[in-house]
Length: 408
Image (cartoon, rainbow, N blue to C red; front, side):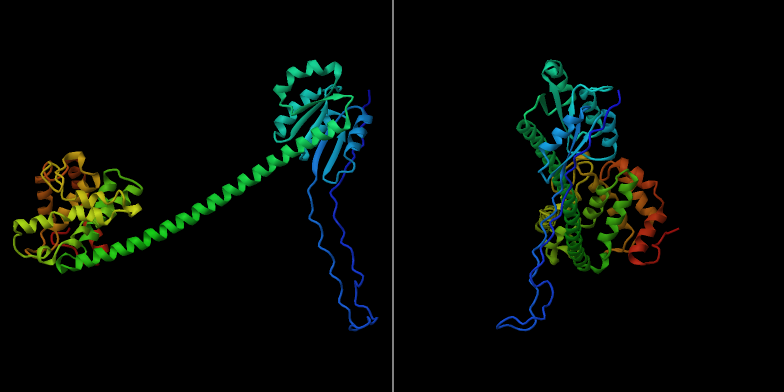
């Protein structure tokens, strides 16, 4: 049987045509009591364009296609597209978007349930309504949940019932569309906010680092013989930490913590810190406070939360005989265990008030000697395999200095 295509009844989106004022142009007539040139009356603003909701109706009976279209013929915000076969409907769904699809149950070639199941796969956001005669009502109920139909309408239908069902489905489709839009906007704004926050965090981190760098410089300058010490051990610690497998942000934490290891000495009097001779018991007690003081100074600086453990632990010894807590082995954070080795290396190969710098070989022997007591022996083994040239290069990069005695 040749199927007749229902003539689509489309209610297209319309535009409001603004009215033209009485004086659309300048008039040559002089108004009584007024100037000869009368200004035009502004035309009212055009009404905002409203996007019509699109409804696809599928039925092999042309009369029902026309009847369905007439229900909405006065609605400017609803556009009806009616077709006479499921094949035409599937073709349209592949090219165009619809908010609602309404299908008859029994049609030649493909049932309404099969059509709506296909529509569910191809256009899952489209709301689906099924129209069935009384005789088909019971047989359709079992399949409704499988296809995900919003509403089952019966023939012969009541116009108000059809109008209400379609309008309800349109409302759901609009809410879905708005939810997608709001979700996407929220995602976009969240990403934008995250970028702003990351920028602000980086700015705060940079400025805080600059401030702390100034404090470290001031601390190093208290004793001209130890200038660059803090920066050198920070860079040395990063190099050794990388060699033992530390990566990412933890490398930054170790470098910062090592650089700031003596920040607590800001609270130690010059008379104690710079005393050329041995410290007495009271002076030692004051000096031993500087790890805890440094840890406290850095409290509340978020990006230094992990790094500040190094100032606290940097005077601990692997065998548990250090201070301030007497920690032993792995109880000491890995950054402080790395620091202990490079700090000793830098101390031996740098000038001190009480002696001149010594060679790399001397430092190597000293570090090997105290592996397992002062130093973590596993990290010492890693330090020993890094060539001296790398340590010299770090020093020269920071200071622009000539190689140290014993350099190769």
